[in-house]
Image (cartoon, rainbow, N blue to C red; front, side, top):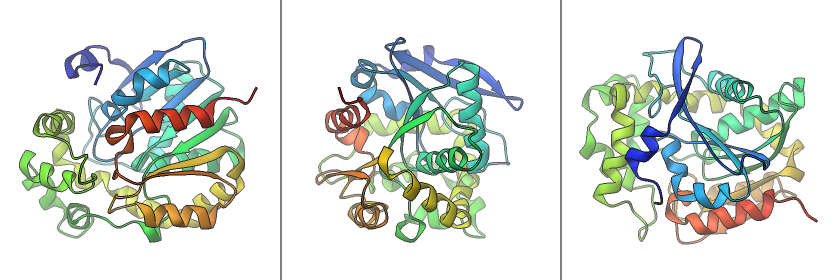
Length: 290
């Protein structure tokens, strides 16, 4: 990675959202079209560092740690995809950004779908242009949660908050990567440090509310995808046990006119596991044709 963990921490900016401090970053070409990067669960905007420099050569980059993640505040309750979407809109307003594209991953794909739905229903996100999806639960019936997620949404979910630690996280998290692209111990330490900041590991089960949100808004969010086929695309890591090739196949079935690209050798975090391929494909799709 071209940026160290310490440099990333020190470069964070902050704004207030509903009484909470939110960490965010901007970078790249400030004269270029803005690109909003929305991270996944249980990590944070640190996930975008491997593609930050490449994407920044062509775009003005904006990314935040959503509420409950990374360096942002982590209240004990009140999480929903709708709230996190409100946060993204508040960040754009804070930066006076109107027109933008988006790159979304995992938890962030639900935020992306909500942005698309809002744009189509009430034009509250009128400036949203193209959107590139990475692995995530775009289709609830194709989502295959890992054991920790199953525990987290069960009546015993509070135990995840009580018992979660670096070793348990490392074993579970590594399972969603490709066999040849798993994070090493140093990288796992870095991911965990952001998760555990402000005791975030104690509220991970509460962040899993997004799984219920996906079921509740399934029809609305999938309708938004179908309506936006001309401006969306999916880059998918095929070896992801949660949302890999099976989710990619569903994408091609539901939105046959949307763009798609399968990376055969990686898992759930393609921007970390194959950053050059992800950045190249995203830039290809996001760059207007001459």
